[in-house]
Structure formats: structure tokens, C-alpha cells
Length: 168
Ligand code: S3P
Image (cartoon, rainbow, N blue to C red; front, side, top):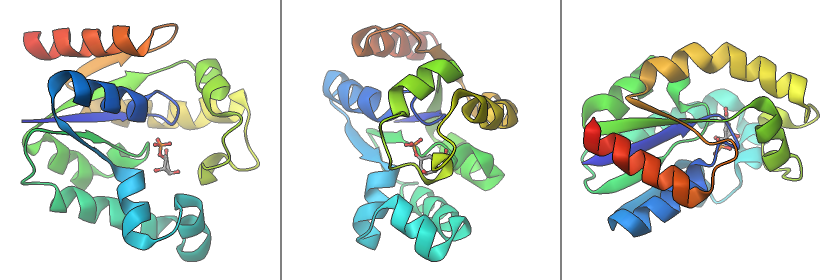
């Protein structure tokens, strides 16, 4: 089976997927890093040179390529659930886990990181909250399981995910 982690930037998808992969002995695919390797340039460089739509098409293609992958944890870029076709692909044979965090928590986690083109020049709580609010409905609609990450350790988050997956 596949475990798919979705959620806003800075909700801990990458870190959680790595730890969860070790605990569950599953491979992990971090979509942003995968696309960066394929393209030989960073997400910011792709956004800048080709535009957002090009990057979004790369995400959709990668999900299609991963359709047959098994025993894998996919850590999605924050924008993946915004396209209905992506969500359909994720749900085919994966359990979708939504990680959430308050805007203040996200800001604290990402404020010193310049690798997120959508927040470039807008690295503040109000802006983060605005994008988060606009995406909430789509994130929730895609999720089988929702885990809040504020104030929790990676270990606690992983345990919570495993427990929820067993019950689900
Ligand atoms: C994005 C999130 C980023 C990356 C790109 C766009 C988004 O991934 O895919 O910058 O639209 O939320 P992370 O959620 O891993 O930071």
C-alpha cells in the first residue's frame, strides 16, 4: 500500500515521511526533490524560468508515474491536492494523511528558508493564513486522516499516524 502525506508548506511532511519510512520500512518519495532531480534545478528556479503551471504539470506527471509503486510513502508538495486529477490519483491505492499546523507554527518553521517561491516576498503569518484558508477545503476533502502537528515531536506525529492508519 501507499501512504500519502499532504498539507501546507511547513507542516512537516518531509521530516515525518523520512521517520515514518524508517519505522514502517517503506521507501519514501519526496515529490519536490524528485522533480528537482529530474529537472536538474530547484523548485524556485523552475517557477522562475518556466512558471507555476509547468511545475504543476510535473507534479501531475510524477503522480501518474508513481501509480504502480508499492510500499512507498509519498511526501507531496503543498500544492498537489489543489488539482482534482491529482487527488484522484493519490486516492487510487493510497491512504491520504493530512498534516496541519497553525499559520504561526508554519511561519516559525519556514521563515528562514528561502526555497519556497510562493512565499518569496510574503514571508508573514497573514499571508500564510490567507493561502492556508483558501486551500483548507481541498486539503480536507482529499484526506482520509487528519493529524495536527503543532507542539508535537516527530515521534508523536508518527505514532499518531500509525494508530490512525491501523484504525482506518
Ligand atoms: C508549494 C509547496 C512546496 C513546493 C512549491 C509549491 C505549494 O512544497 O512544491 O514551492 O504550492 O504549497 P512543500 O509543501 O514541500 O514546501
